[in-house]
Image (cartoon, rainbow, N blue to C red):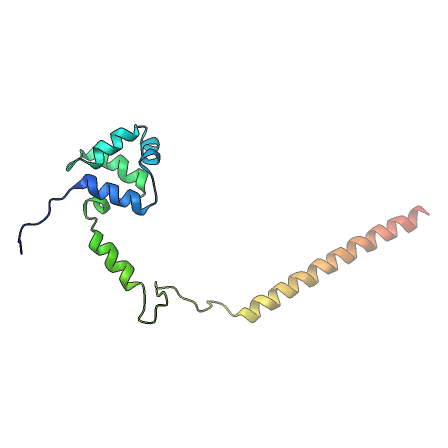
Length: 134
């Protein structure tokens, strides 16, 4: 087992993040005002200057640190930890109501009653105007 660490290949990380975002090289190139070939060259580069990296990070919707610290193993761990033993997604979603549903039903009913009252007043006003004309 080797104790050597893999080099921090920024280009490969950009490529992988782009793929995870379901973005093609052409789309990233267009967002950056570059050619697809330029993106290919960047993704094959081990190091990228900070200014380009900042622009790429912005186009990918991620921070520069997010690119530099990207780890495929971490992504797989997050995905793996998203599922419970029974296979149901547990992504920290709170499925409980933060309000009383009956209060919402009452509120909706009151708004409907108010709308009907306003409609009745409108028709009554029209009827009285019509009667006064006759």
